[in-house]
Amino acid sequence: MITKVASERQGIQSIEVGFRLLDVLAKNNRPMMLRDIAKGAGMAAAKAHRYLVSFMRIGIVEQDSGTGRYDLGAYALELGLSGLGRLDPVRLSGPVLDNLCEQIHETVALAVWGTHGATIVRIVDAGSPITITLRPGTVLSLSRSATGRAFAAFCRSPFLKKMVDLELHEQAESSKTAITTCRRQLEKVLTEIREHGISRASGSLTPGINGFSAPVYDHTGHMVAAITSLGSVGEFDVEWDSATGKAMLKAAADLSHRLGYGNMPA
Image (cartoon, rainbow, N blue to C red; front, side, top):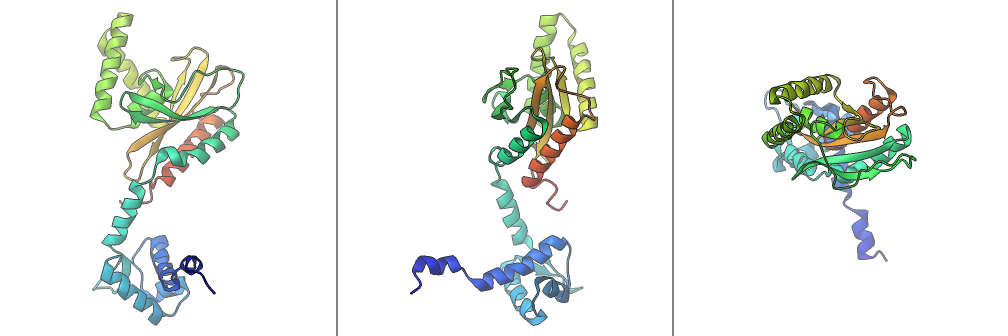
């Protein structure tokens, strides 16, 4: 005798079959003829048509009256955006950070934009004999740290601009330097960072420590986090085209992809 739980686990086969058609449409990323959809899903055209009619009734598929081609409908987009909105960069970053740490053999971290600025929320320690005083909750300088510079260069936020300006005023006052000079120096750094798609800092925040930081984007193209790596000066190569820099960009791109960046239609 089949129990109720076992029966529920079997699911509804017709739904699973029907979603093969949606998978074909999603992967082709273009309107398609019925015969091509059916072929891609491995079913007869007549059977595929019945499923597509039902999908059109609920808005997950639409048909162009002029060409007869089918495409994903407005409701499919709504479901996709809803799902993307639930993606958590902190939760999804775990495997990415672990793999990056194993690859470059350096301490890596994830930072997000918090109430007080660029804030470390997750760390994977490489076990280096060099102690790096970085803890979850640490808020980093926007002008002197690799992480802060990444946010200053790539994150679009009026509040961030105000915080950068406040920090530069404090630096100008403490160093007896004109605020215009401080702004010009930082903008030169940020321009170079934007050109390479990654930020770096060499002993400017913590003596003896170098760092890279790469931006992470969500499905809207907004920067939501930064992946940072840190190591000792002399051991940690901060050349733009270094193996570490390339690995950082790849890791940030992987996490961005998991968050839907580049997956949604323009």
